[in-house]
Length: 388
Image: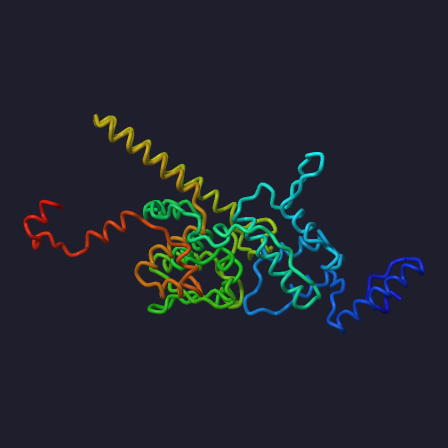
């Protein structure tokens, strides 16, 4: 009987089978009459949600959250899960005896909780439209964390060209090529190591560009390349070799193997090499600082010597904090001030509000803009000058 209904077949007694049949019939009646039934099982709604074709694919984190929801509630029907159960799963609860039962988001930051809830509610909204879910659970939302005016600030304004050069010098050519492209394009790590193919790169003079197919926004993004990226990529292609397969992944590991998209199951596959390069770069910066310190001390300039040492320590710390995503912030900050449309095209943003989120105020830049205002002091009356 269960098999004929498309349900999981289990060894069960006749009464349980008949009860399952009655419930199935009641669900059919509810759908036909427009009444509220039990709703489809969470697992079935999730399977169809994840397999629905989209112009902009679901992000890996959203997919993971939906799968986690299935693991939590499995084959339970949507309308059989109370709003309180949803809240307890997310935020935990306190028992009558005072014992605290933590939830999935207990101890997490407000922004992390908001991202989790947004993905969860997007799935449940789909279940409401297509799988008989009667109402969505209500959660307390943090509007500030949900819609931040700016992304978390990175110290990209302190990332001077010589520090980037130090990092490049410390990298294996396989990582250096990726960083050079990210610096020029602001591309995400996933677009670089998983999406770009050999045929997506053009280094012909006057046409230097790279295309990232089906980026996070669901569209191809073609970005121009600067002379530094072109020079590094030419060296990389000599090292890479085997360019006859134009559909092959462009970027390979240091073992000349393609990266495998793991859906963020265990982090990006280039992190180990990138962290090693950062350590080497930081060490080189510290050693150069100590050399400068010694030279200045011997020259009888102790104050400058201490400044050189402290500057090197700060630069080394900055390099250690650097992530590849900083280059996306750097592109947004620099290009947004000059040409917002170009910034959007180069970085693959669809909405100016998205690129604005990556921009941060730089007081020295504002002072520069103010200093460029026309100087009217020469034309002010004498009394006005004194009062100013």
